[in-house]
Image (cartoon, rainbow, N blue to C red; front, side, top):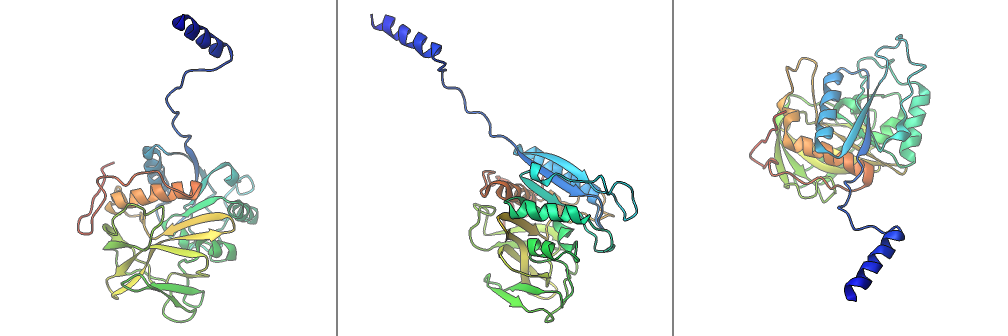
Length: 304
């Protein structure tokens, strides 16, 4: 009788549309848009490498929107990246050598609205050199490659203290020779959670006197500039309206680099890129710190 009644219960549940528990479905991948088209860096190779790293993580789907490459090129009227369709926008354009080459004002306004409404933007490496004409872009990135009169800089001390350098004091932005750098974490943040407090990355640019409004900014990590024995931010986040922005000096791929340089094969850099992109989309990170993460005295690279 017990078996009979158990069978009746199962039949009734099936008839009511109930199903047996199933394995949990994998989380939906986050949509990312890379915007490129012009730069004094190798933006094509950079975009391809960013997409490769994010795709390999299994957390993202990546699309690319490439603008026309010159002021007088055809296609500007038709170019209209749909920022609102994506969880994160990665900005990989830089007009520092051609200031007249810029996005149409309507595209600038769309990015402003997207971020104010809660979107996420990752300013990839030289993207913080871009768009000096655009005051809202400066507010988005907080610190960029600018003259010394342009805005404040944030200088660090060895213990992680932040010291504001007023406009006109100190120098304009520079970096000097690239260098192997110990990345020093500052405080606790979802992007850096679980990483070593100090880890070594190869051949990067440590920006001195990056300048801008320097408001609503949180420094995540900093490093020593060897030539001047001073300390400066390496990674920072910015609150812009309801949106989130991440910027860093990591990720340099120059036009004459042969192949993919060690500075972006670094496991630490790639982990930071993945986790920053996830945090921009969700406010948290689930991508684990890998076993092959660098230590303070050992660089760790990933083969492609």
